[in-house]
Image 1 (spheres, rainbow, N blue to C red):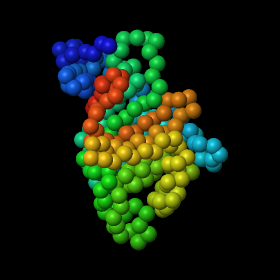
Image 2: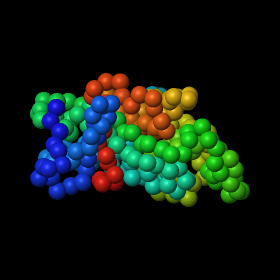
Image 3: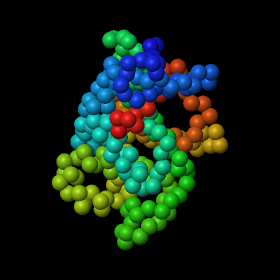
Image 4: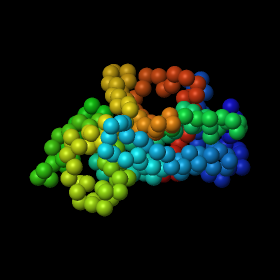
Length: 230
């Protein structure tokens, strides 16, 4: 696997990290690798509802969708440390092989705010008064509300979209996510939402508080920092 180093002719500051225990290094992407990364983030992918459903298929551009999610996480006081891409899509960026095919787009969102903690929010508050809600529920509703913004009828009535109930937003997420997982222990605290694509190229959002083991397979040991592109 070819990875450029910091002495390359790259003019960008997008880095990749090798999380191998014995080789935790950061290097810069080349211009060609950066173009491949932009192709992944800027290519529209269909996010499909589980049948039967009255919801439409959503054509989502990963870069714009991630910007929406990050903006709302900040709005609801959920602190982040980094956002990265890994797995097959990251390998596609790094390898010099025109025949290499990636499947899912794996996004790692590292958060400071504990997933199992509670914080005050006005989400679903009928009287606009803050109340305590667990952070993972807030994150799921943020992702769901971002999905709703891609539905034409919702865009036409932003005021109505702010009045959706927790139950409705949960139904939206159940429709578009084929995985909704939360792991909480002393060693591991992370959660996953997989937005499904019938061609198998799911948009996977993994919210990581801490992990005992950063990766299981070698393809996951490389992580590309996305912050310069967002």
